[in-house]
Image (tube, rainbow, N blue to C red; front, top):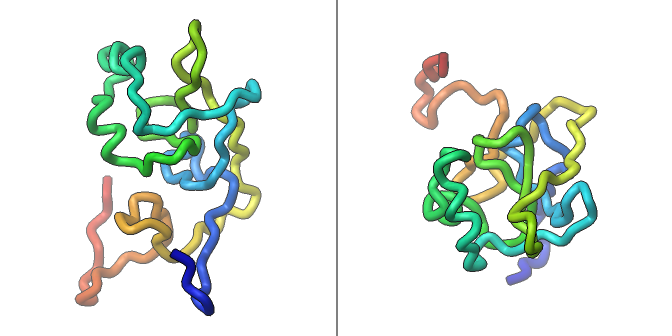
Length: 132
């Protein structure tokens, strides 16, 4: 659905942190030039990797949008995606670290999981507690 006259913030095509957990850009190609698969594709081989990579395939596919964009759920070193290859299940994506380290001060998805801004008060005005 296209809304006319509504300004839409575009997430930068770079990662704000080393791991890029917050990255929600639209890159859909690996560092080796292979096309990413959609996250909702049936990938039995990826399910077999659950133990060594310490994530649940079911939780993974529920926590991100199904498009074929590079993502990192936090378990790997940087954004990655599944590929359609007989010998390789997934590959890292080449997402550069942002030169401008000022993150957007808004949430860009309904859940706001990508938000890494500096807001530190609740909607009621209470100060937030430190994460650490």
